[in-house]
Length: 92
Image 1 (cartoon, rainbow, N blue to C red):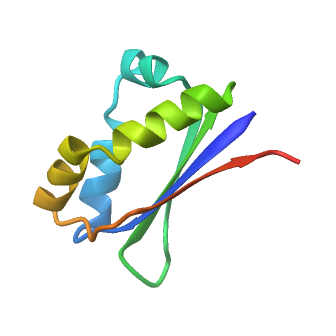
Image 2: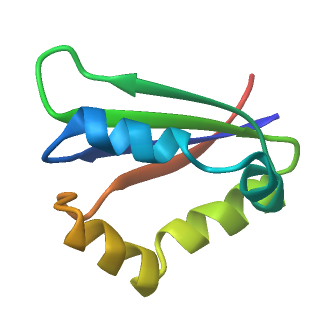
Image 3: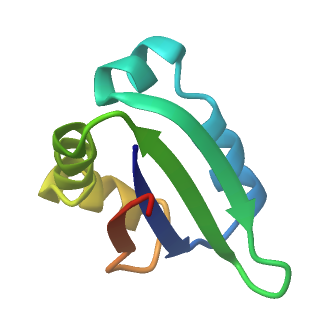
């Protein structure tokens, strides 16, 4: 299993989390996400999205999509501080 960690500072964590949770199962399947957990920092406006994939290729594809100019432009419009912190890890 591979995990994509996404960490970002947002203006309204509750609204951002609500929007993140609204992705349909079909969309998650298209990205290759087999599990997802969302965290909010207790002392800041940082949100962390932890997504799990069966293959490294699926994790890399989704990371590349998140880093695309189109997605970054949408994030910027939502007030997300760029760049986002994104990294992929393999369970040891």
